[in-house]
Length: 196
Length: 196
Image (cartoon, rainbow over all chains, first blue to last red; front, side):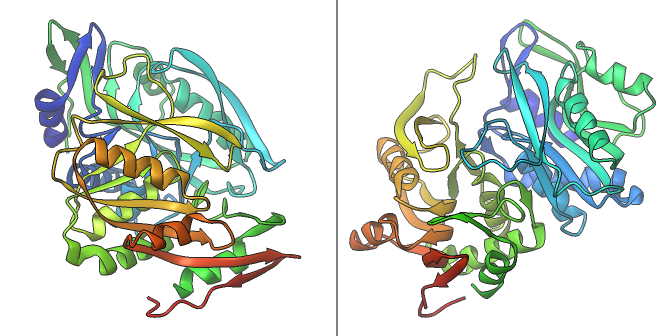
């Protein structure tokens, strides 16, 4: 998606090899105009699958999930929680994942009372690197006996393995920008067919 | 706001005295239709102040902030971070607050490169109890030499002191539902004048 690529190039920070920070528009300060455009792009691709729920992970996936939900006529969103609340529900499904940002393992939790059996779930997240978060969410969808109908990612790091693994499984994955290389401050995007 | 009060009564869980869980529609599963209605209510109240930025705290404030930003013609959002990233900016303003949910202190962080001097900031959050989060955000706004133009809260716990303290300071606070008492599963709302 051209608008996203332009934002990455003009506002992203390549602070070290393989790392791009998008704090200025996607996961600390949010460019709401761009955010709702991303949501519309996901709705355009996955609307025909008629998802009835969006699943994401706190915190940085929430804004994108809400914008996508709005473009899909305000379907509900569930965000997996990372911290254990004092008054946590006993119905939480838990999965251990590795967070690339924090360089540590963490547990993600979804209350299965809200993820109904048979529901058609669209996963939305801001980044796809090694695919740990998406695989954790997929495991939770399986526990709930619900169905995955799509995976929408803003920025895929094509030089890590998550995207290729998910595609090899035949999963319906749309990444709005795929970065194949970050080096010396240069960002090389993959040419993607049928681009929105 | 009637729709919010109805959701609290029909879907909220009063698990112990003084505690109400709204995981089923406001801070784990998100009722997107209601969320965007809440955003419109904040826009109706604070639009005339012409805010150019919304400030909130991860995670549970993000969805409401994004919905409100959309109703205000997609102004940007900043969400204060609670966890320290591996690659954190050196320009972070930090404030220590006490989290009622987690019953522990935590540090909230905002990158001052994105909170411009003189900007007109609307604070949005899901809950107001003792007002720790709002006061922390206000301290950060002050550090940035920006201006607070309003505070929009979904659910105020009127039996805790945050709301009355902020009103005593003459701050422009709108709480869409004020709960004065939770006991034996009953929820008593405050009658608020000029209700939306």
